Image (cartoon, rainbow, N blue to C red):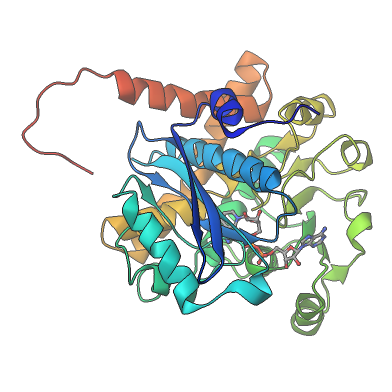
Length: 366
Ligand code: NAD
């Protein structure tokens, strides 16, 4: 494979800015990628991961930040897309100084980038970031942990997909497999078990995990949810497969194994490559694009920027249902994969807002 350098990636993915930062005292080592700020400041969480190579970290931040641009645009938010990755072992590097150091780098971007928690970073960690900058959301006492609301958004994506595929949005009689019972997968399973407004319940749920603590938690709290080994999750004969772990899991190896009718979950970058969206379409598997299905967390933190109101945030998250039905319609009308239809939808909004007549207004709305 050709070795890609930062400017190669920026050109290919159309990025505005990439910032590398390092602090010798705490070992803080990270990359912030700002993909696009046409609609507003770039917002995206900080992911801490023990990347094997710098190139792997760069590719991750590049893909994730572009996904944030699409996610914000498709959700009707006045935000651009960005992301930060920190390179390090989550069990070793974390400290107050580490996250306050991160806060200073975020502050140095002067509001072009707003951060939040992500994989291996918490609301508590963001509390340290907030000591150094106001450009951080998802804080304790404000919108807090985004995972339950991200999972709620995924539930509405699942409902829209069920409606599209089976003519009803109800969970009754339907079977599910969930990959990952961590922060979001755990809540999604609870909702599927009937802890939701409609009180409808899945017929059967399977789950897989690699973290023993989470496996035990599920077995103890919900013994009816059946554990399967990680490699067995793809070939289960279920209605809906819910990826709630890591990205790239819909690929050349897994697609031939799938027997589900729908793929919808909370994970980011679910498709390994865009062509895998076409492959799902060919197999008549309906895909709820990840950046639409998991936009609940972003919609929730966006409300924090406006002064947080939980009811208003939840009402906006539920709009994922109608948005997805509209995207499914575009996909059918244009005979394109749902993923491409969602990207077109997002790009069209960015283009429109960028090009509307810049008439003078004496107030500036957020
Ligand atoms: P998490 O780390 O709490 O949960 C993921 C779980 O998946 C972990 O418990 C992990 O052990 C498990 N896992 C990893 N590889 C696995 C495998 N091969 N088989 C089975 N289980 C495996 O993370 P999360 O916050 O639930 O996020 C999950 C996904 O959702 C990520 O892709 C994240 O980027 C995305 N997402 C999360 C949020 C949020 O609000 N937390 C918002 C948007 C998107």
